[in-house]
Image 1 (spheres, rainbow, N blue to C red):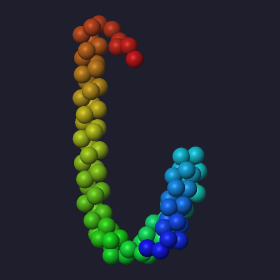
Image 2: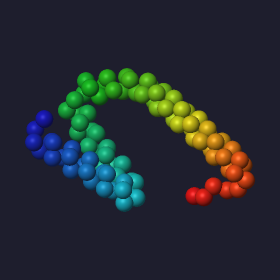
Image 3: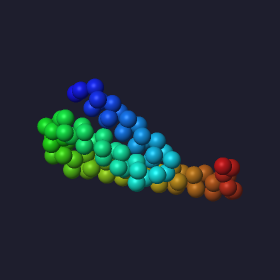
Image 4: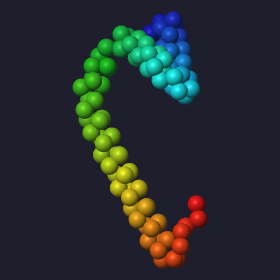
Length: 92
């Protein structure tokens, strides 16, 4: 990848992060799109492979979120049981 392309990708990705952190989502998404389009034009085979694997990634992410939600429910149940056992509210 040529140096000017690296600069465009880096600058647009960095600016996207800053805009998203500031709450300017539209500008952040546009800048992230610029960065991704530059990468996709430079590495089309890798992006095609990623696009093919995307459903698997989404499924794994859903499974991960399901596990996290179940763990959170168990923590909430344990907290309520401890609270009842001590006869009052836990201090937060």
